[in-house]
Image (cartoon, rainbow, N blue to C red; front, top):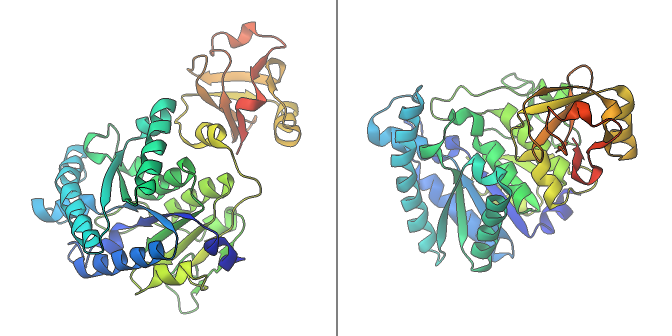
Length: 356
C-alpha cells in the first residue's frame, strides 16, 4: 500500500521544519540543507514534481538580528521573518542552481487562500512554475501578517498547499522519526501507519519546546486531518536522517504514513472546508445533522436551532450540532439576520456544503 501511494504520487509537497534547517545554535544548517536539496533533486529526476514549504525564515532572521529565542511580540517576529526570508531564499537558490534548477519564492497569506479569485491565482502560479521545471519554495508571508504567527504554522500551510493544488502526497520532515508511542521512554515505538486521527492518536501528540519554531506533533496531526479528508496521504519522517526523503519516495517503511480518507473532495469543496476562518455558525438539530451526514441533503431552515456570530449571504459558516461540535461547513444563502424569515427554505445547499 505504502509503495503504491508514493510511486504513483506525481506531485509531492515537502514541508521542511525549522528544526532540520537549523543547528543547535539556531543557525541555518548549511550542510544539512545541501543534503536535502540533493535528495529533492534525486526525487525530481525520478519523475516527481516537488513543491517545498519551508520554515526557517524567522530562525534565520533571529541569527542576523541577535535574538537568542523566538520573539514574543508580533513586530519582532515580522522583523526576523523579513530579514530571514531573503537569506533563506539565497541559500536555496545557490544550492538548487548548482543542480541546474531554478527556484521561485511564493509567499502566501491566509487572505490569499481564502479569497476565491486569489486562491485560484495562487494555484495557477504554482502549476505554471512546476510546468516550467521550477521548484516553488512556499512560506507564509509573515512580514505582513495581521495575526500571531502561531495561527498559521507551516504544518497547516503545507496541508493547505497540498489541498490547493491538489498534491498526491504530503511529506512533513521534522526532527522525530514519526508519530511515536511512549515518546521519550525506553519502550518508545514509531507508529508505522494511521488510518484515522481520533482521541487516542491525538493523546500521543504534544506541542514544541523549540526556541525557534511553532507547532509540534499536534499541529502535524491537524495537517493530517486536512489532507486525509481531501484524499491525500501524508508521511511524517525524520529529516535529520541522511537520505530520508529518498527512502520515503522509494516506499521504505520509515516514518508514519497517514492514509487518505475515502473519496476526494473537489476543488470548490476543498476551498469551502479548509480555507476559511468562519465568523458565524448555525446550530442544527439532530434530524438536520443526520440528513446532512448520512443522506447528503441540503440544510433547511426548520433544522436550524439558532444562528450565532455574524455572517452575510455568501459567507462560509460552521455548522454545529446542539452540543456545539462542528461537523460541516457551507456557504450561507442568507445572512444571520435573514435566517428567521426563511421558513422552509434551503439555507445551505448541498452543492456548497462539506461534511468534515
